Image 1 (cartoon, rainbow, N blue to C red):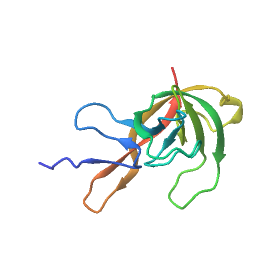
Image 2: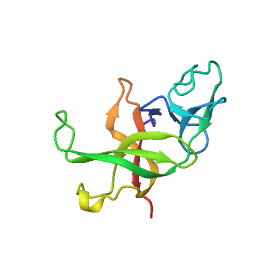
Image 3: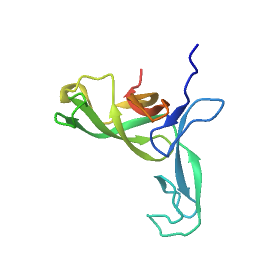
Image 4: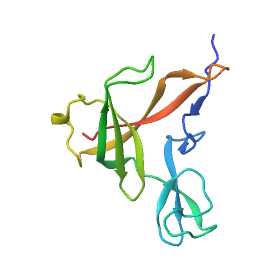
Length: 140
């Protein structure tokens, strides 16, 4: 019988609780309300210090902009759609848009999307733990 390996977050703002579903976490400024990814002590919008606090981000959003990538590193399947999404309730996140044809005629700006969590393309650490990542897919 093989022991199941733990899932590791592919990026620091992806949180994997021991019980419950994974989620994205931003830092929100208590002064101006701006939301950013990654840990920080200073707001990049208003400059407030020590006013940042964690905020669970929505899994719903809309497509802001995208690029269809046709050339990448060896081992990365192309074409794929790299997207920037504005999340409901605040936060702007970059990730790959999946479950769509990489055809501009089929990818309207403003398209409603949702965040989905899946294996990070088969990547593993030296101990065999797999990485969990997030992707965007069109909302049904």
